[in-house]
Length: 171
Image (cartoon, rainbow, N blue to C red; front, side, top):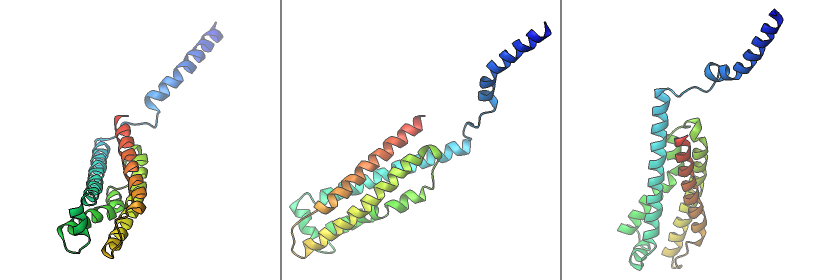
């Protein structure tokens, strides 16, 4: 009779082991308050980055949308060129802005990857906008076709970064 009881206990123990391991032996721990706060700051920083980059893209788009602002861009030291320089500085600082956020929590690593990729495109697009303005000042027409692709790709990757960030925030 003793052998059958020990066999029964072995079966019960084997059935309980996975549950016991999940309760106390798991390496998945709840984040500490400091980790939660750091994640919250990182998330807010990436949202702010997204807002700033979109503002710069929208501003550039508006500057190239009217003949009055285009005329202002053909000369130096005009309100339009000052605005454009400000928007360009925002875009050229893209990677640095993301780097200042730090490596970020593990759950946001994919969002960070998309943000860095977006920055590469936005910075390339900014250089191409600058070249287009230089050509405009030398009598060429307005041709932003070279900048359109990288800026559009950057904007799309920014949207994905924020989408992935929001997804990771809810899990």
